Image (cartoon, rainbow, N blue to C red; front, side, top):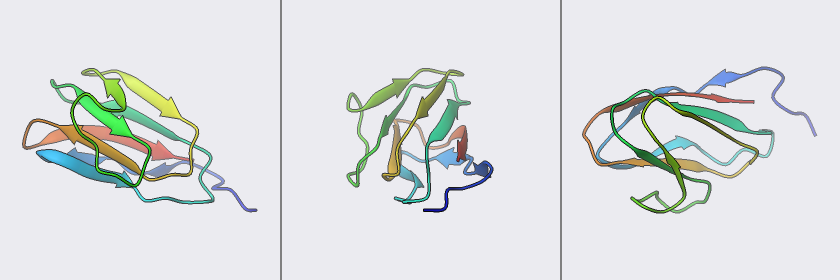
Amino acid sequence: MTFLTSGVDRSGSAGLGSTLVVAANSQRRGLTFQNLSDHDMWLTETDRPAEAGVGYRVIPFESFSVSTCSAIHVFTGVASAPFAATEY
């Protein structure tokens, strides 16, 4: 199996509701995510959309890392919430 050799930028902006951050990827070892907004975000590592109160809560300006090759979704209750993300 060939893993990603360096970080791949997956930064973006989450819309109102659930947004796909990265699709499932058998070559990924993990993902580092930072909430760059003033609002809480919720991450899930499943094929299901994220929702408030389910999964990993990432408070404003905090980072979160997870070792997974599953899809990652983020939920936020605002129309435009920036985040930084790197998959590796």
